[in-house]
Length: 355
Image (tube, rainbow, N blue to C red; front, top):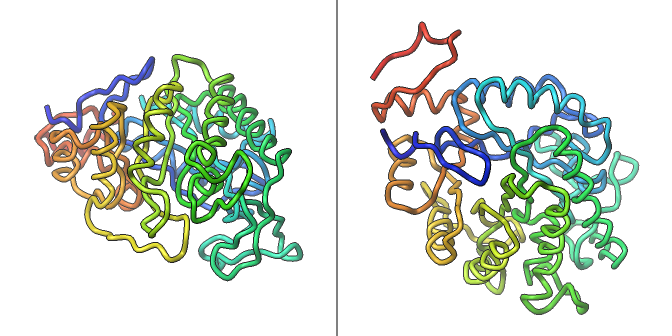
């Protein structure tokens, strides 16, 4: 059997293969509520044979949304539809996770097909926040978080975790990447605070570590906890892979099980060298130097490419994003290419081509 279709044990959870659907915003919610779009979008990938689906960035507070169309877990009423989605995904022998997020200074924007612009109050927007009052590009600057605001963020992550547990998710991923709030605190290009949350590496990582502590107070010890990081800002003077390795060593000590290795998003002047598997070296180095379980993501598009990443020890599993949008049934295709025989839904068996 190929490495791509080997199982992977993470605490009490067993992934049936090494293929995971990366969290991808759908911008299709109303007031944070999931609907049938999310059921069909997520459910089709479960039918397609992946081991784990991580639900898109799900806001821990209304002000933590990227757009008014984001999913949320800031109130109990959000749970009902998410429970039904979870039940269907589990019925397909697939695990389900949620990425908990706060957008920081990237909040209060319109959805991509509506222009991705900062929304004013009369356009349905709200006051966004950040570690410092520094704008992303030429936008109106965000409000710098007060100590009380920082504590609210920690509390919001904790409360959302409690709701996630009630929904029935198997995995929680804390979003500390892509220029959203927790990444903003990490990056010296964005965080110019002069208190205990800014300046030194220890100070800039403080909020993320406090969020992890808060989440772990609620999330069961035997359930996996992921953290997504941007391993590099791809900008001079920004957060880099050396700091990422140092951070992950601390996260591992705190009981984080998996690092989802992405990159970029903090500043507009980033210069990313994009190509097939361009972020895989981050996962490889973090795995090698910390011995933590890592997931690789970023322009991984073929079964052969995914298999090479795993067999060469560069990562422990593969996260598919755009390729999963193009092909919800990627695992079925990959099994045929790699000459593996995997179980298909009985409803689809008549179309199966045995290797």
